[in-house]
Each structure stands twice: as structure tokens, then as C-alpha cells.
Length: 70
Image (cartoon, rainbow, N blue to C red; front, side):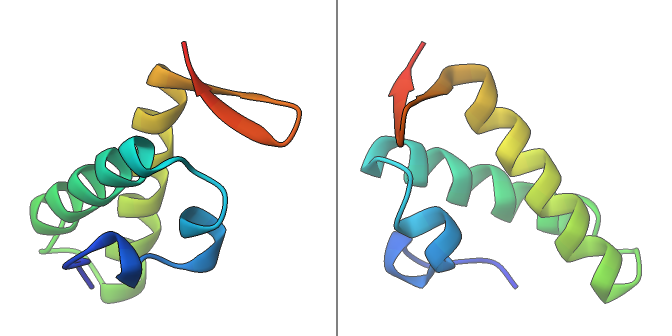
């Protein structure tokens, strides 16, 4: 389901990404959720997660344990 705020994000996102990356993840996830809404519910969530992580990885990279802007 779409996320209303960063506090609603799963711990795998919320506890590891900086706030700006969380914003990006949430917005891209929500957009993908609506874009793929005609698919099976389990497919929609999986696709939205893949799209959101791909967007984050285009703008951030992991250095050690931290995600930093590219």
C-alpha cells in the first residue's frame, strides 16, 4: 500500500536511508503503486519496491553502512 509519510516506511528503508532518500523512495514507490495498480496485489508491491530502490540507487550509493548522494 502507498506510504503517507517516511515514518510509515518499512525498517529496511527507514533505518538505512537518509531522509532525502526516504522521501524519494516513498514518492517513487507510491507513483509505481498507482501505475501498476491493475496487476495482482503481490505483484504491485514487488514492482513498486524494485522501481523505488532503482530510483534511490541512481542518486545514492552505499559507502560502508551509509547511503550518500552521488
